[in-house]
Length: 153
Image (cartoon, rainbow, N blue to C red; front, side):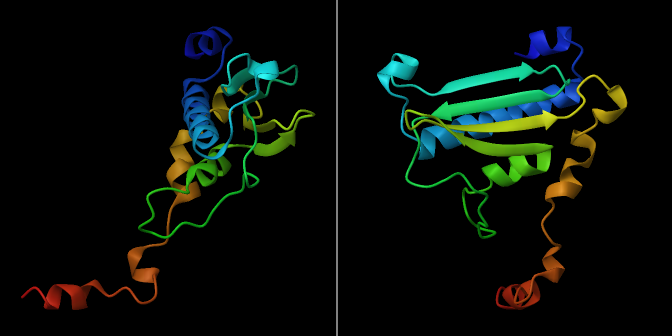
């Protein structure tokens, strides 16, 4: 994937974002979705695809057999071990959505970048932290670390 996109003129930072998006989509499909039926995939797997469309947008998508719930961003607690995948995708993506198939399959598609050929627009990673940053600890009500350290002394 990386080499083909590089040869196609896609900025390295956009490729990095696409790889992370693909990883999150595949993780979600394996964790929450059912395998595709034999008629669609041949062996009960998930299907991943990417393309640069005629408008110059990099699209990444993963299809699985659907799950008990619709893909939607969660609001995990600070200490949760998961639940951030679609929030990461939302921060990296210009757009994303869910498409239902005729045989019950579900495809999550992501537009990683609207203009992959513009090197000035390909600096998605530079501002990633500001797009997904959690509030400062001092701004979280009810958290007073000083009290916790007083008990240690």
